[in-house]
Length: 328
Image (cartoon, rainbow, N blue to C red; front, top):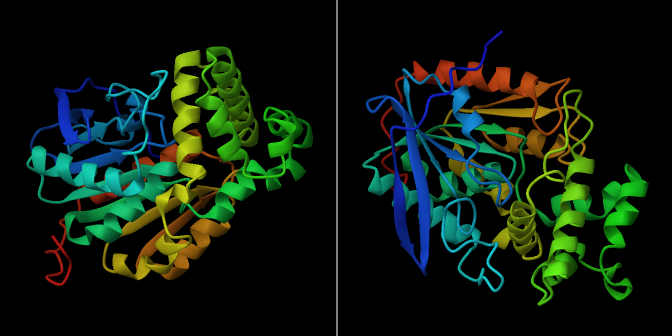
């Protein structure tokens, strides 16, 4: 079994001005002459997770992590009372990944994504296939309305008590509509108590629907209130706008990824993100490898072992030259 690598501190970091009044915090760890890899965190709004870099061999990888717009140490923060999220869309984030690649002098890199980071990774790779050597994707999502409807409404059949509490966190007149949009309005209310309550209710539900894995422990519901507000604002901003994607486009355009090696890792117990999305992506993506981890949910230690093995394998791979037809 593959084990996690040592957790080393970054050797370089900084802030990158990406326009629209946004500055992104980034950090680099591993070895300067190692295989470049970029880590796309989940959420949206989770921010850099230091533990993710333990999946990469620090002697063989140059690992780039960054806080996506409005979260972590990037500015402005979604915790600010009247933050404007207008310039935070999937297209903006895809452009940010490219600006960061250019800023760091990387020609091509492996893309790692988890949960929301999978959706962003797919969008980036389809827009810039010539810049991607491989993809390693965990807890596969594709940003469809069906996926967000499943989480915000249909999963009430699995967790009825918790879902009713979640639904009842919005005004009665909005309970039959788009719950992510209703929560987004509450999270931007003028009353800080209303914002805090909505953030806590959202995070309680998020923890409930990822709770079936054997090694699950509450994370969001026990987080700092400022982080809860940041996270909930960004998730509801994206979900209430269909993740700023034409519905189903990432699965329809999976053919653009042909020739890029990939490992898709998904937990069989991931009820918040059912396996069918990973399966459909795998079927539509020539050359992708799907690994289903029987005792994993939306993450977990057993999933990490598979991810480490995939990354160790890719560390030794010499990527072929980019397809001249692929945009660089």
